[in-house]
Image (cartoon, rainbow, N blue to C red; front, side, top):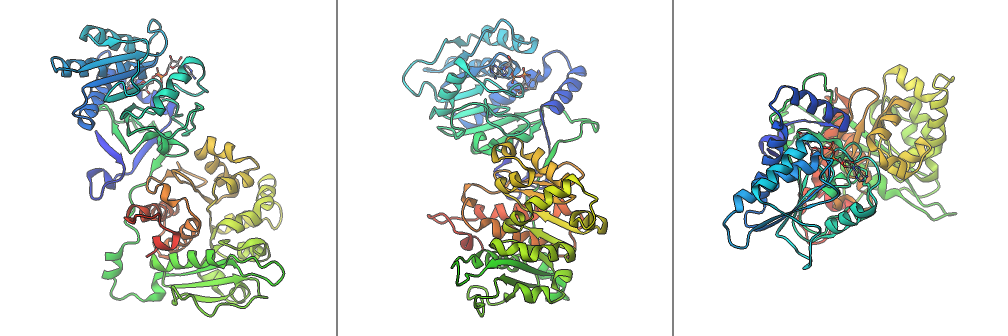
Length: 526
Ligand SMILES: NC(=O)C1=CN([C@@H]2O[C@H](COP(=O)(O)OP(=O)(O)OC[C@H]3O[C@@H](n4cnc5c(N)ncnc54)[C@H](O)[C@@H]3O)[C@@H](O)[C@H]2O)[C@@H](O)CC1
């Protein structure tokens, strides 16, 4: 059994790249494993793993309440109840209660066997928890696991509303009941944020839905994994990969490179940051500066900022990072920078972005499109999807030239590009990122909890770092700058993997934060 998140520093699991599986692949792996094992062996191992983690996490819990559903997730719960009952037997005040939701008569074979074990061990079966509001020291949530793929209503929904609002420490078996294993969609109308301390133990496989969408919000402080002694066969291709913790930017490696110079670290130019015009007075230059500062901070050799809107006066320098080279976007376009540097386009670009985007699409072999660059290309990208071989289609030209294009949409920007809405994107983030990558022949970084990095080929990568502290203005600009710097370093051969390193490093910025107040985007770069 290993803890997957939060990611520890230097732990055994830290350097591993974890395969993620959805429900279909998990069931196929389970079927194959079960064929080579004695009856009920997997459920026995699952119940043992649950009981072991329960005891390790809450060693002093005396009153345990196990809430079970009618499938094999419930079976895991029944077996854990049996084992905990045996462990606590004879201890004054100890009790193990099971609250079955729904009839036990139609349970699958494994679960029926586990139910019989629990009854033989003498667990107390109850109809519903009675007040007080904290009926136990520990709750085990074993209602739904892989088997949930539709909304929950009726008594089960009421029970889950109670369970998820309960302040008692809760161990979720496989998945928090209500979470979709494939997508991280939440199937009940209760808040996904738990009412008390919570952890999740994923069994047999790590499910994709644990790490994106509402997965992390529902799973609690930690996600643990027990493979039940099963190694998936090669034919079971992962649906996604969990990103490894990032060692980038690798400061010791930069230190060792005695013979390097700023030119060998690569150039980044950020094009965006609309300056306020006399007519509208709206300026967004800070966004481009943030992206540029992030690129510089992450080790890019030279970083330029091409600000939009020539009417306004260009600030002479950035007082916070005087090493940045400020100029107008027109001056950038008049130079060879679009061809030679990694171009990060869009941060704070406003409506003016549309004027420079066609030139950047046509000229920049390494292009990161963020924010207003994405807004500027919305209809064009959709048009490209309908007729990808249309003459002059920049996407077809970029693909043919083997140029690198990275899009970093948040869910609303992705929804615009896909012609859907935010709910549609969030309901299946892996699918949305993959669809966009296929459509444009580009690499997509779909931001949000569990950022998804999807290329046209191969399984997507899901980022595991970061937390709610990233939900503030400017952090997206910082991410775009970090991706630019990562691509500027010459060794980004595996593009999605390289981008995943930048995304992981971005998430890691909040992990370092120890302040009493939430950080601003600028604070994260200090
Ligand atoms: N069979 C085994 O040996 C193993 C089973 N495992 C466990 O088994 C789980 C999968 O078991 P199942 O396939 O039985 O699925 P679940 O136990 O997740 O759910 C199936 C049950 O939920 C009901 N259900 C589904 N959606 C519902 C809804 N919206 N409203 C009300 N009821 C609903 C179904 O009618 C069925 O009774 C895994 O998540 C894992 O916890 C693992 O421990 C691996 C080993």
